[in-house]
Amino acid sequence: MSRLRGRQFLAIPGPTNIPERVLAAMHRPAVDFKSRAFRPVEAEVFAGLKQVFQTRETVYAYPSAGRGAWEAAMVNTLSPGDKVLIGETGAFSVFWCEIARELGLEVEELAGDWRHGVDPAAVEARLAEDRTREIKAVCLVHNETSTGVTSRAAEIGRAIRDIGHPALFMVDTISSLACMDFRMDEWGVDLAVSGSQKGLMLPSGMSFLGVSEKAEKARQSARMPRSYWELGGLREADGSLRFPSTSPVHLIYGLAEALRMLFEEGMEQVFRRHLRLAEAARAAVRAWGREGGPEVFSLDAREHSNSITTVLLPEGADAEAVRRQAEDRFQVALGAGLLRLHGRAFRFAHMGDLNEPMLLGALGGVELAMRAAAVPFAGGGVQAAMDSLAGA
Ligand code: PLP
Image (cartoon, rainbow, N blue to C red; front, side, top):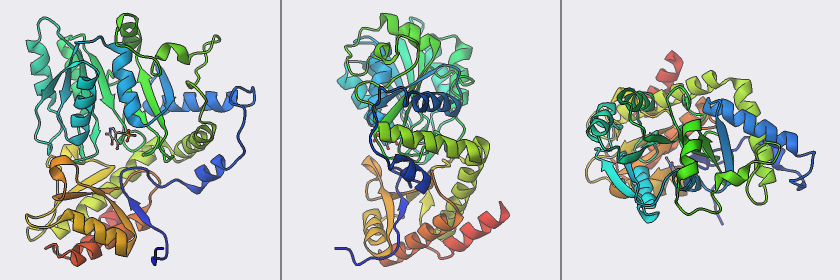
């Protein structure tokens, strides 16, 4: 049994804090998901999702983890042996490559150093070389949750369009949607993959897939085997959308409430709040690193993530020890460094239902945990975060 008291500060990148209003909306008896009474809730959710994706196209939903929508994007639009170009951004682009290979696609990784986003010029150059139009899809993790780097998806979309290459543009928005600006239509995104447990402030268990008209056309000739992920079955005879199998009715009630909350706050304000909190988190890390201590892993100010900061520790410091101290003694849950960053970095998420004192409390816990884990750092991170918030 835990001896710890008070509430935990969740600074992991999902699941994020679930607002009381969303919990309350889910606290209800089950309903018949085929009943007429439930239809308006589903309709509200599908319409709201389009608004969040900033699209006039269709957003489908599955009861699944986010990686289900990765698979759905590929199997619905590609054929065995097709080549996909995946920008290397970090652990999640690596996982995406693995899934694509397992599905029988040919993967070409556009190499990256993890500390920068995918270079739009490199995408353009690679597509220009591809005269035989072998590349069928360009895949991008918009916000790389392992590194805290946000690639410039708008510029990459423009590069694909400018060069006139027919590849589909697939974008993973799992840790950017409803945290930072994402414009499916304006940026020329054909398949937008997302999940419920981050900016949408819900439990995990729902994934979303925005599908452009061009991607709908690609479906007609796509030969990858698919059953659960088949998009064709997700429309009723009257044209309305539905979930495959038994609808996750409680999650849908929760999503309806979460969308209402986002729209009440206003999406612009949601993005501004995430930016303000992210800048405060980065200010804290820079203060800690004044004398060669921890550093913000992301290197290009244009690409700093507004939903998560990956904190690289100085050589010899143990990021897992910081995480253990934070969790066991100070009720702060931090994300682990993934793959090559394991033990070298921890991840401090600031996404979803979060305000200034919550952020400052978690940063204070991190400062204590770093001291307990004997990480060399300069003090004053929380003060720097407050200064940043006061000035923003
Ligand atoms: N892509 C990104 C960018 C993620 O951050 C995650 C999870 O954190 C995933 C994909 C996988 O999502 P899930 O864990 O819901 O399958």
